[in-house]
Amino acid sequence: MRLFHFSDDPDIAVFEPRPVRIASVRPVGREWLNGPLVWAIDGDYDFMYLFPRDCPRILLWATAETSEPERRRWLGDWRAVAFIERHWLERLEAQAIHRYELPAEDFEDLNDAGMWVSRRRVIPMGKSVITRLDRVFAPRRVELRVVDRLRPLKSLWDTTLHVSGIRLRNARDWE
Image (tube, rainbow, N blue to C red; front, top):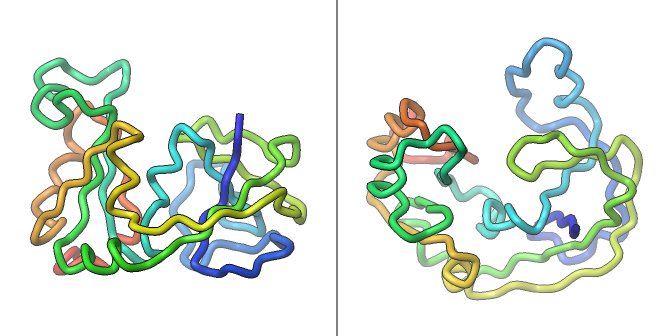
């Protein structure tokens, strides 16, 4: 298993645990997830972070509970779908992102969409640069869908699909 951290910063020598910038409501007993941590994503879910840092996006995939009609309607033959707003496409095409590989033994699994955390400093094992982010999804069997606004997709949270929203505060008319 491989773990990664994605950043627009090309010069990270050490990842120090830090609290999240904007705290989330966490389940009882998991409030510590807002505290100082180093976050990583496993290779199966790395597509969630192949975006410019502040790019709002909605990601969805099937779970064991997903109904077949919803699977066909939203995913077709794709493993997952990533939605972004049209005005972010140019940045997705032009910006590079740095993928840091992290030692898995330093992390604990959150059993949630490939997310892992470490409570101590982590030294990356390597780094690569990924360009033309718009082209990295299809090889991962993830369809990139460009829409005018993400807000009309709010009802996806009422489906049987797994739906993740990242940086939605930056989406047009989200609130």
